[in-house]
Length: 177
Image 1 (cartoon, rainbow, N blue to C red):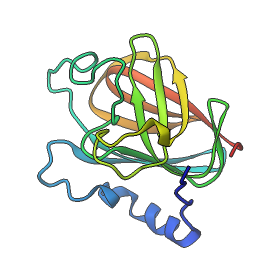
Image 2 (cartoon, rainbow, N blue to C red):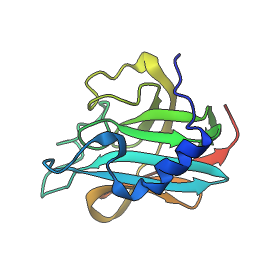
Image 3 (cartoon, rainbow, N blue to C red):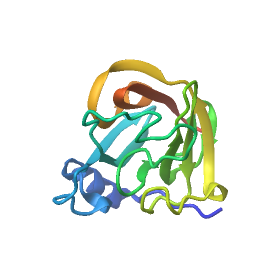
């Protein structure tokens, strides 16, 4: 499988310096309904960065409606969500090499499949190919407070997705690869 290399030293510093812009590789969001978002942080010495489109609930049925059950979802809006790790890691105990990945999910009523795909730069999930998956991990969704705009965050040892009243978390640790 093809791999995206980890971002080298000085470039990583430049990327992190502009992390607040939210634009980076996602392009100008001026005319988009779903604005660009960025989440970054460090867990166990691993730098993590996510870029994603931030759709709103807008009084819509999200789970099993806008986002169908048991189908691959870009896990955001517009371009596929991406996630980068500057070191080899473990995701819920499973090895994943350092690099930049397309982050997709398959939402289910009882469990979700998290997908780290070797093709990060794609529009939505229209070109998604499971043959390019570097890792799949199953997690259990949790209930949370209502969150109007899809949000990712680095929280302690976890990366968390919050949208509508659903919370999805996965643990990150240094190692693996």
